[in-house]
Image (tube, rainbow, N blue to C red; front, side):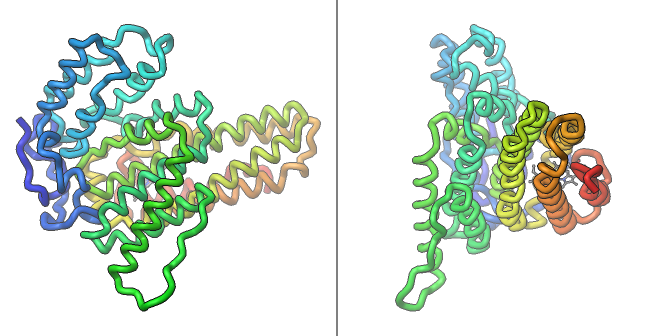
Length: 412
Ligand code: HEM
């Protein structure tokens, strides 16, 4: 049985669990309220049944006995336990039971319906234990399937931001440090969803409590509007793809931010590849439109970076200690962007489209991509300094060099 934790315990994984890493997580203030720098709500105020894996095990057993209908998979019970104890602390028994689910599904995912597809895409995220990679950390297969079914990138990003805003706003009462992050997340959400920016209330002088209450109200309204506009498939994907390795509140934010960036990288890669085809077909206008859209996506990450900069160093140290081998240096979507640009340029040189027709939009994309890389490097310096990365590179010096590499060096 999993050790029952004090709600205010440190946010690292449960130390007695069979699969917990041997290295102790850096210390976090054990008396911290849920929110920025402390435990997540699920960890601090758990449903007692989620502390223990037995509910998930029982429900999995019933699901198996009941015909293994993917649409009735007990996601809630499994995720409840994962989020309460942190993935790195989930015990061997539940991991073994989950690892048996994939082979037990009757039809291969390719031929099965959407529920079986979703379950197959989701499982890698909960069976990877402490040995997972970047893709299983963020739930890449779920988002890849969403994109294949035609979900719009803006819709996915807005739904992820809505979840982030809701999670941050829920902790505001106990964690004043969360105000800056919640404001930044709300601004990113309103920009992404095209909602009116929240306004300060006028009238009598405001107390800090009034400000917080105003912010919570503005968050609730923006989250409701964003969720109303999202499809059920997108909302479901967002709901299922949060399995932090620790009980840290900040890791939840970190995962959502990574998922947003991945959606951007994937969209930019698709746009560049489609622009290459448009160029080959002599359609300069179409290529320009695609590249302008890609630039807008990349430029839009500045608001998301503002959320990330609210990451306390100590909190990131906990995340880092628990996510070794899960670095974004493994991001295939990011590599696709960098790999596709030379192909676009050479297609341009051998097509009927004149270089000058696309030169400025290509430069704009290059500039936005470079600015994004420099911001990432700056945040890395601030949060971890010059230590090595979890992906095995030298860290900041590697990033500084990588930030200088241009997408279209031949443009001059
Ligand atoms: C506090 C936050 C972050 C820190 C300290 C950080 C740190 C690092 C480090 C040290 C590397 C070098 C590779 C390695 O050895 O791991 C790296 C690479 C990378 N990171 Fe981050 N990162 C952070 C947030 C993010 C976020 C939110 C994303 C969004 C997906 C991201 C995307 C990337 C990418 C794409 C690379 C590969 C860059 C390349 O090879 O050119 N990082 N990061």
